[in-house]
Amino acid sequence: MSTVSDHRPLVSRRNGRLTLEFQPGAVQSQMDLRDPHRLVLAYARAMMCFVLFKPRPAHIVMVGLGGGSLAKFCHRYLPAARITVLELREDVIALREHFEIPPDCERFRIVHADAARHMPQLAGSVDVLLVDGFDDDGLPPALSSARFYADCRRALRPDGVLVANIFSYDPHYRTMLRRLQHCFGNHVGQLRGIAGNNRIVFAHRAVPGTHTRAGALMRRLATWGSPWPCLGFGPVNQLLAHRVVAGLRAAAHGGRDSASRQQ
Image (cartoon, rainbow, N blue to C red; front, side, top):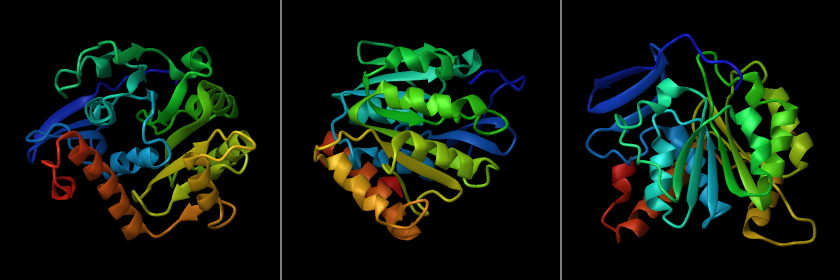
């Protein structure tokens, strides 16, 4: 991301939720005030489906902090993972206490940086890379360029997974998919209808000649549809995302968190 918006982030409380917007009506993140670690938005639950590929990642890197929903969730429910969040905007980072984002520590860190420029420094160090860096106008060109995707692939360890949140109505949507496929070969796919207009795209840094959980799932994705592989149907995939998130919460709390808390 190469520019900072003139619009200050807007924080509001309504209907028991704390909401972050960059423009009125353009929701970036929401927090349930009664359950701050619950993933309120469907796209956030969908992005957590990376655990189907990488159930025990050692290092997760996130592009874009927002209200910290994914960062908080991974910090709490994937306790073996180290988490690095890259965020360009100081005014967004300044809201971390409002959204109950944990302080920096040995396994959790927010880095004030331009992700497009910082990505080459991460070469070969990342198991899961979550790209969710939006501004007022959507996904910045710097976070969807062929060069950026190539740097993302190099940042991943062998068998690592990239998860990108892309709007289906973005005029460059198909171009971005082609760039990802060019960079990752045929190891790119989606779960159809999992989060409405938010299309969650998975890309796998495959290792030739090896057989891994991530590789097997991506091969299954790649057998569905052409030229943009998708697996399953919307309601089924939405239920899958609910179950993935609820399962992580239940595992961390000995079953005290039920699936209904995520519905």
